[in-house]
Figure 1 (cartoon, rainbow, N blue to C red):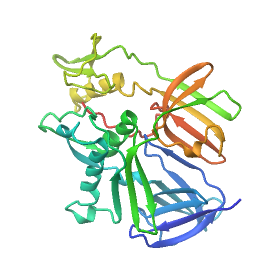
Figure 2: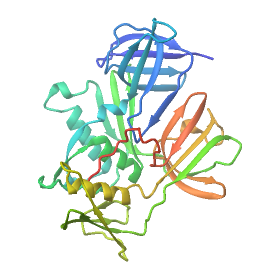
Figure 3: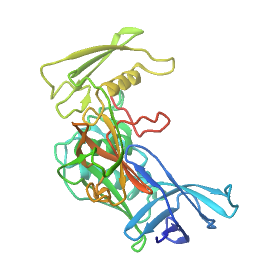
Figure 4: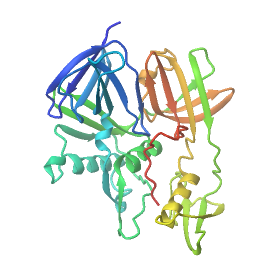
Length: 359
């Protein structure tokens, strides 16, 4: 079998070095900042923030170098390169004007935030050389239910990935896709809808080597949540679930009949009631649509599921033991086999999930 080609480039798209490896394991989770490693014969001059491209035929992975380790138990001549997907370039806070929700398209809004942070920023050192961004589709009447900060008028500071890009995928199947184009010296970003339609996967067929299905129990009938400060019941916040399964503190676009639940929350000294209330609302309402974790392992190139052709954001009805579960593709791992990860639930408590809770 042909080896993988491993290439390292500076952010000016100049080659640092290249080598080959026989096998790799690659995993990517749209909901988290998971990284990968590859062990190669030492390449001099590799630095953090360099680009890495690993390819074999039509199979290609690209990312940002995050760490370099020299020497292993087997040889001092080996080098371990850690890297994260190109999406990590967008891991930044942005000033979010909540009044812009619903104006124009969701895709163009994301493009504008990327452009102002990394292409036309007045601080030229912050701009990313060769970065381009474009919208492939236009989703109207959008809302992420982000509300203003207490003193911010109609603004809030949110993380671009946590609070905008991930919810756009979960709610509207809008993807932010990245490509490292060395020949044209570009990092290309395209924002657009995932493949339309819903696929069906029979997880009990012989082509599925291994499966795991975890369903989070949710109380979807509650659509109004009143939260009190347990140390001062004069303080309260009210959250409303909306028909599109978004939630916020705005009393509009309500679900009827109203089903109300009350909670009292406590908070430690130094933290605020508001942050505790946000967390409680998130636990109650977040991700009601795809509150599951379904992992399916199959052979690379499986002819029935065709895992290489599936994009993040693909909605699927997964049949398991006679039951059908609606879910969404959010992660994948490829090595000797391919594992597809569906749903918005994660069980690994040590994993740093990309989540920015907004009230």
